[in-house]
Image (cartoon, rainbow, N blue to C red; front, side, top):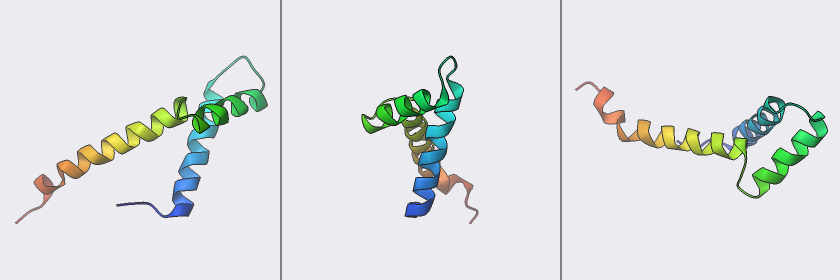
Length: 70
């Protein structure tokens, strides 16, 4: 099931901000800028989170028919 545009953006921003907060040692504006740059180039933690989420959704979809009762 595809998410609506607003939910997609919400998750995207959440993943980017969380990835920036996880880094330590630099000011938040630099960490956020780096994560945005990485996301624009399909790299970084937020992109990895997205890919893992898609992978789990595909796996769940493949096995969804096992849970249905007849």
